[in-house]
Length: 364
Image 1: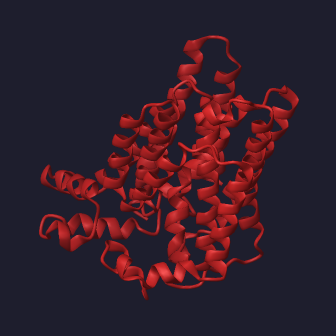
Image 2 (image 1 turned 90 degrees about the horizontal axis):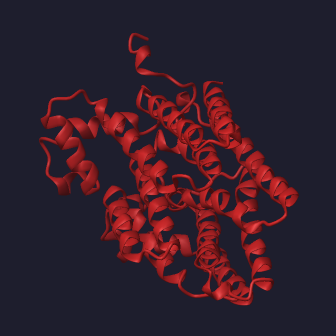
């Protein structure tokens, strides 16, 4: 219930700022949401399945070599710095929350900040409590994608490198940066997606990758045959359908835009959104086969947020824009509620986020 209250408060604050005609009130609402989300995230206690793992890493960092801990450079030196300064281990979560939320907020600024912040709460906030390193990497990829879309390739590469230093899986963003340069036709895009689906279901691509010698030489080689190497439990399939509904619609919509937009090949925004959404669909399909590939789909959580931010600019009719955007928000709100109640801390798996506890529960 507490998560829903946070969402309602942020929604109310953003709505006030969004309806205001003064720039000061809009900036204030954006800042207030930043404060709320930072405090909410940084004050959490024993929230997230990996919470205990990070505490163990924190205690090991001063007595272990970088190679032995199998952790990305950014977090290794961050933990060592906090440790050397003698701060409480909880400062790791405070600093991570500060960086994740700040990088995300700075990525958008005034540009459709309403949908950006609502997207953060509904899509990225809950995973960030458990997937701490990857959540920071996602924030840097949000920044990187913003920069590549606005024709700032070198700054985009720098942001991507920072993401990789936070979580190695962010290296998969580099091929997307290259692919977005090419204006794929509708037939080409669907042919590529069809080929990838055949590779997953017919040729068992996830299993081939997991058993390959190439993967075994990386830090992810430990997952082959490990606790994450198992068939993903799909359940009713409604959640999977809802998660894939929006990217499917966006791809189809963008090609509809192409048919009325002669300069589609010159429109970086449309090209990159097509590539990002196709990658998101592919990652979801991979994750349905073997659980560990959820790490790949988690990395691309920035994609539905970009859809929320940029799609309003591409829909000219106000009524159509309102219907589409708030339908998308309704879908992500349903998934948000499902994620809360399907990931209790008592289960010991999943995100482990429910119920919420803060440092004020230390005596519990």
